[in-house]
Amino acid sequence: MGTISTKGLKAKNKSFYCLGATGVAKAATDTNNCALSHYYSYEFKQEADPSFDSEQWRNDHDKVLSKTIPQIKKRLPNTKFLEPESQFLKMRIENKTVFGVPDIVGIKENKIFIIDAKSGKKRKEHSYQVSLYALMGIANKLATEIGGIFLSYPSKGNDSEKVELIDLGDQEAVDKLWTKEKRTKVKSLMKKMGEGHEPDANPSISNCMYCSWKNRCSLAVKKEEKELIDIF
Ligand code: SF4
Image (cartoon, rainbow, N blue to C red):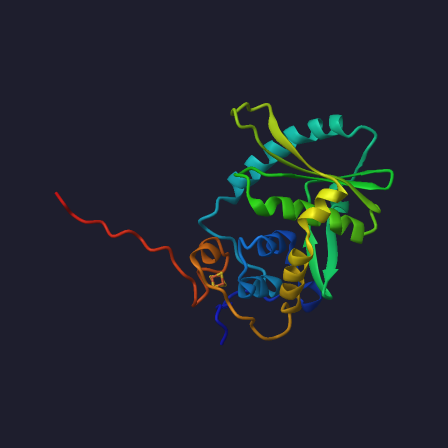
């Protein structure tokens, strides 16, 4: 029996084993560097988390995205934006599959532009995620060079008409993010995926707190509740 209970879950068909770009970005930035968590995500499709309001998330995300589209079209004139069905990207790392669906993919001449909308707080893994999409675009031969990567967040001043559009840079910025050390870390993770034996877990409060397997994992570390003392 494994460390994580997969009771009631359906394993993906082996030819569809894959890890999302979000998971890879979390591993690269140590937001979640537990190989066990990624190992199960690679092979199993999880049920929806009842504590997560996906409808609210979808609404918030779509609001940010709809305000981002006109801004980015103004910013990148004469760019061809791909239809949603062409935005599904895949790449191989250590012969294992990584997939991702960025919100906006633009192509101008031989350059790719990736834009991702976020409805929540800024997190360090977001820039790795969006830059990974750009690398996936190159791997998918959509372009030969990275022209730009952008993240868009709800406007700080609560101006409902605006978004904060952050230009993270071009090919040079992506190369700076994906250092040799980060690439080695991700390669070492991907090597462990789909190999038929569980990799070592790395249980910690920070890894387990947002791990999507925490309710099924026998090693999950829970944040200790502070004991309340009655002084009245
Ligand atoms: S709950 Fe913690 S130990 Fe278990 S898979 Fe997730 S991160 Fe790893």
